[in-house]
Amino acid sequence: MAETDREANRFSARAGRYASVGANVGGVAARMAMSRLFGKEGTTNAAALAQALGGLKGPIMKVAQLLATVPDLLPPEYAAELQKLQADAPPMGAAFVRRRMQSELGAGWQARFGSFDLKPAAAASLGQVHRATSKDGERLACKLQYPDMQSAVEADLKQLELAFALHRRMNSWLDTREIAKEIGARVREELDYEREAKHAALYGAVLKDIAAVRVPQVHPSLSTKRLLTLGWLDGDRILGFAEEPVEVRNRIAQAMFKAWWHPFSRAAVIHGDPHLGNYTVFSEGGEAVGINLLDYGCVRIFHPRFVGGVVDLYRGLLTGDEARIVHAYEVWGFKNLDREKIEILNIWARFIYGPLLEDRTRTVADGVKPGEYGRRQAFEVHQALKERGPVTVPQEFVFMDRAAVGLGAVFLHLRSELNYHRLFEAEIEHFSLDTLAERQGRALAEAGLPNPA
Image (cartoon, rainbow, N blue to C red; front, side):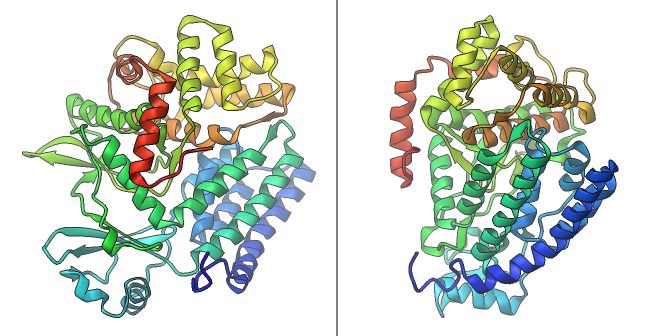
């Protein structure tokens, strides 16, 4: 990183963050340890941890929410509390915004816009969004990063490493080291708005022929490493359509399916953040038509072989081909598999793939209450791994699983009724690793992104 970067990973900023995060989380950790010792662990500690994190805001909140969405990583009471947290940080005031914009675009930054609203339109864990217009009147969304986020992220990830180390000592059945690596890599990428701009360009190219999915245009001349300017996309919250007629809900759900699986099958890339705030519904003539993809910070680019594993596992489960199922797990990076561990992994795989395996119109939950969806399978996996573990969750698998669960949650909220099997078959028709590798390489090169290792 250039020496002129005033907001690089600074020790002084990290030290202050260590103090605030460590004091709050450390106190809860001590209570957890004592409760575990005396056999009184439960929702009280979970609520205390959520309260400690909730007072900190910033990147630790994003880390906490990521932890809550990794299936069976945390006890249910902890996951439930963390999922309640809001990732919003206190907004930057108008004077502060002016200084931040000047540091990114220079002294005459306001003259480069037609208008710029100093009051944020939205806030998140790493930055806030401002409405603006270009010189020619185009409406814009300017995402401006909070100061010293790199130092805050590094301090928070160090606390995450300590939390995972404690988890491994208390729960030997799940090795979390690869999970920690993956979360760290993705959160660090989210700091780099220049990379996020390339992600948006990649999605724009891959989805350019999909009318039901809109991707905002990037404005490079008004973007920097900590300022990302995109075209503004009008839309309404997805949950606002939860009571619409089923045909409307199905249309939105089908657009979501396309937005997720089409880039994965065509360029081995997924939109890894299942937060409902990252999508809105656009309408034409007063009728919901499709979805807007709004945020590209948490994007995961896979090696084509990983997509091959996804297809192999699907086809192995569909036909009962055990050799193909095992091959898929090994391609993903699961090691030291025996028959019992394979059956344990299959419990979760059949749950995740369930809607794709049945050639019929159905809801995702298929009669199961949304609040109970996946709980039985997670409990079975938890109990079985405690007896047969440990198992190391491969790094690449973490966000794939998380995003799949998040996508399922959208379908649950919409109560959509679709033939997911036929939708998926259409995406993987004529699938070929060589074709995918060629297509991905071309798309990444055009977006200015490196090929995955």
